[in-house]
Length: 316
Image (cartoon, rainbow, N blue to C red; front, side, top):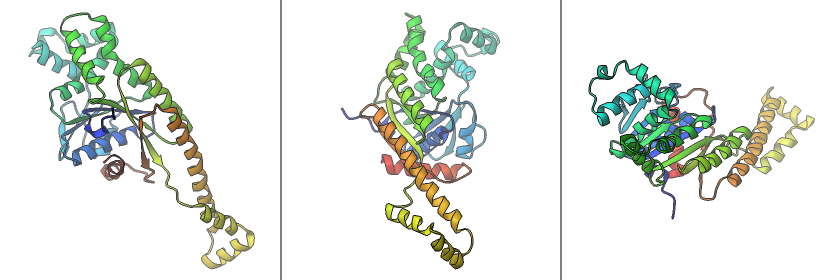
C-alpha cells in the first residue's frame, strides 16, 4: 500500500536535532497546508516561543487564534490542557472544586510519569478527533524528547486497565498509530551529527512507538552552483599569471571570489556524502524532502513563505 501523502494526514509531529530548522519547517508545512485550503492548526510544544517569530505574530497562548487565512496557532500549556480535559470529560466546571490546579497537577504528574506528555498529545489528538481542523502540525520537542512524548499514551494504558482514562488512551492510540492519520516528520541538515541523530531517532521510533515516520525533511541543502567545467576554469584562474591579469582587469578581491567558489564546491561535495548516508540508512519507503539553503540571516514570515513554496514544489 502506498503511504498517505504528507499533507493528506491529519496530525504531523515535526521534530529534529536542535538547530536544524525544525520550527521553520513546522511553520512552513502549516503555511503550505493553509494555502492549499486546509483548515490548519500549528502548535508550539517546544516551549521556546520561536514559532510566533516565524509567523510574525504576537505571543502564542493555549487558545488557538487565527494568524492568517486558514491558519491557526497556539502554544501548549499542560495545565490549561488538564483544565480543558476536566471540563470536557469529567464535567468539572469550576476549578475551585478540586483545589488549586497547579498543586493537583504537579502531584499527579510527579506520581505518574507520562501525564504531561499524555495531556499534550491528548489535546492535539482531540482536535483531530473532533474534526476541528483538517491538519494539526506540531512543533514538537527535539529528538531527545519526542519518543517519550509519542510513547506516553501506550505507557499510561499499560498502567490503567479500565475506566475513563483507559478509554481516553485507547482512542488516542488509535489515532496516533494510524499512518493514514498521524506521521512524524524528522528535520535534518546534510551534516554528520544531524544525519546520525536522524537515523538513530528513526530507529527508536520504529522500536519504541507505533507512530509512522512520514518523511525526513533535509533543510539547507546547498545548490549546485558550479559544474566540472567551471571548476576547471577556476583552477586555471588561480595560476599567478591569470590572477594578475584578472586583478588588472577587475581590481582587487579576485582571490577572495575564487576562494568562495572553492568553498562552495567543497561544502556541496561534503554534504552530498552525508545525504547518501541518510538515504541509505532510512527504511525503504520513507520519503526524503529537500529544502534549499536560503542564505538569510533573519527568519520571519517572508522566510516561512519561501520554505512553504519550496515544500510545495516537492510535495504537490
